[in-house]
Amino acid sequence: DADVTQTPRNRITKTGKRIMLECSQTKGHDRMYWYRQDPGLGLRLIYYSFDVKDINKGEISDGYSVSRQAQAKFSLSLESAIPNQTALYFCATSDARKGTSGPGTNTGELFFGEGSRLTVL
Amino acid sequence: AQRVTQPEKLLSVFKGAPVELKCNYSYSGSPELFWYVQYSRQRLQLLLRHISRESIKGFTADLNKGETSFHLKKPFAQEEDSAMYYCALRTGGGTSYGKLTFGQGTILTVHP
Image (cartoon, rainbow over all chains, first blue to last red):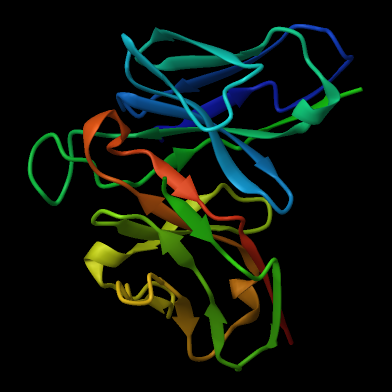
């Protein structure tokens, strides 16, 4: 089955360390996203990419950077991790080619990975 | 700026009782609303979207533009409905087209 895979699934690190979370997908989707989930705050968008050459900041991009190495790969980096970046991180993809309004429209459905739990001590 | 509010962090009902998960949004344009669900040990997944006007697993949601709401309802809750539910808003236009803004989430527990 086409899938969205995140690595690592769990990571414990120390303040100041550089961390990379990786996401790869076999769905053939062009759009990829990174969200973080915090209790009481829900899902918040960190970065998103609509194609390999398009990278956009989300609502909470400070302290994070991303790289879209290929259509299928989208990595999230924490250059110098801090404790308040402890969270569950989700990668998601969507397909812009299908839609109820014709070619090029987006149905809005996101397909999520299983999540990467990051703890910063 | 767009915003999605789910006022209830936790919601508990008994099996067979009606359930309503509230969602309110703030957006000046034409919104598209969705409900996503995350069952225990499963991935977050789409439950339903307002455009489709469908009923999924007995759940329905009607977009009320006057009240800027998109509440999720089910007349008879089942234990397997216990999950985290997220309301999400998609805004149109420009480079933001296609990205979703999520609410804070509501954990629904259905007791036997």
